[in-house]
Amino acid sequence: MRKICKSCGAEAHPRSNFCGHCGSDLLVPYEPPRSKGRAIGSFFIYLGIWLASQTVMTVAFMIPVAISVFSDRKLMTLDYDRIYNALMSRVSGYLTVISILSSVLFIAVVFLIFSIRQRRRDRLGVFPQKNLFREVGFRKAPIPICAVSLVLGAALNRVVTYIVDVIPWPGFFVDSFNRTYDPLLGGDTSFILVVLSTVIMAPITEELLFRGIACSRFTPAFPNVVAVIASSLIFGIAHGTPIAIIYASAFGVVLACTFLRHRSLYPTMLAHLGFNLTATLLPDFAGSVTLDLAIFSICAAVSVAGIWFVTKKKKETLPEAGGTNETV
Image (cartoon, rainbow, N blue to C red; front, side, top):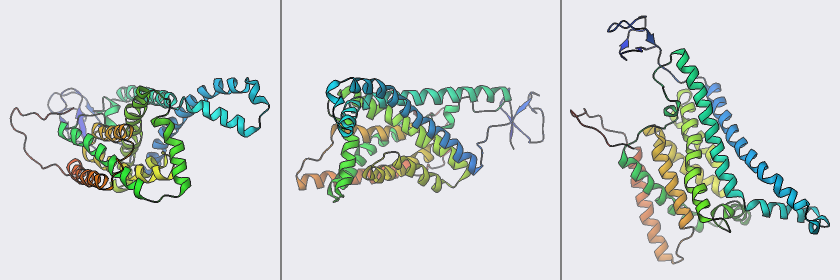
């Protein structure tokens, strides 16, 4: 195991107790655990926190809605199904707000846990992970990669939308998809709240959980291909409906490969933002067969080129004197 000086940062021999340059004590660098059970357990703890955040916020809104429904005398003489439908219809109006608040709660809890772990790590003299958010991917990424990732997400949305439209899905697949996502993407909900929930908070929260936390836990214990497939499938299943599970899993593979290539959440968040923003602003195609096929072909070509660009291996080059790389 490597040892590093806590004063000058020089690397020392593993058997040394003091730095050969300045004589200071040595620190042991942080290394992620490689236990398979520990990796899986750590991820599912955070997954449970994510689910608990949604549950807490849903219950917080459900209680006053239930009180108002059961206090309505007109509903007291109706059967159970009518009361249930009235309850769900009123709660559905708050789904966007629930989504925003649950995302904020999840991020706050994760930040608190990371802060506590960081203080413990500082007391033990662990180096150089001074900020645990870097462990899950909150680190700089090249500006061209981020820009292409944003365009890639938008192009992939058009490709997915076209494919979903032309496939003859079973009726209950379509019904379940519409019941789940229509309240989140439109209806009577404020457009600002829809954008805040779907375009901003969802990419931050889901990328933190399904790419940052999942991949940073799985890759030390499993091969990269296992980490990509596992995190993508869980990401897809979290979307609930059969149609969403299929395309979200495929999209998750692209996001996971991008994350593992750059070890940064910024490209994946921007790709996710571009995907959701396009879905919010352009839910359907124009309706013309020729025009729709042309748009699909262009977006498919952009998607292929974008995936190659954001996942290609970086050429090993010597840095120029005084040169810097633009990052975000």
